[in-house]
Length: 252
Image (tube, one colour):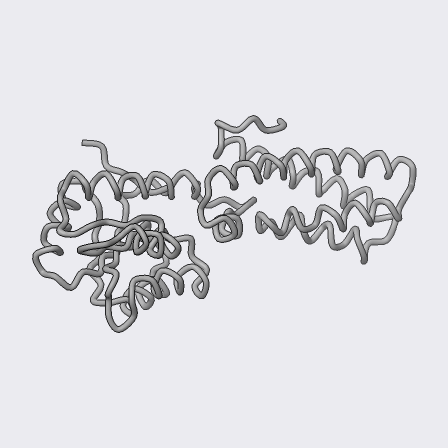
């Protein structure tokens, strides 16, 4: 049996909040069969404390009516307050379509109880695989945290945005080279100002920092070196994105 792994090549770590002892045993039994690492948390507050200390879980499975804080509130807090792109599955004994829509506004999936191994495996595997697809191994050049939060984990939106980032910045870097040759330093500052948010969007501090210097602080004599550094940083970002998203047609 192939173990489902997280982006770091480790067995998936799942946080579970389930008050029913029998359901916990069913879940743990299935997890053992699938080689998932399960961390039992007493409630949502315990989840938050664990995340603040460890910050390396791959999935949270939490019951809808968890106390003292509901599953909805915990899912919202994790993403808005802790800033973590942690996928959440909310569990419930019964739900209507209207109730399911409410759950999915806070979480990535809904799972009906009692737990049955095939459905449990299918839902968790699907959710984890989607999360892994959107969260490649950590690197020094970019982060998808902002885009995941912005889109609610919409993989199509994220991939389209990555492709747009590459094509747009690539064109503007070519323009920088041309206006540098023309010694149009005002235009250099305008271009740098325009692409700075693109680097901020993927949380690349080096690129955004160079753009800030070119936009406001850099002397004209320093601009050629800064533009070379910006091109190198973009090349490193591009190389990493091609590696992490080989299905995208990116500029090499």
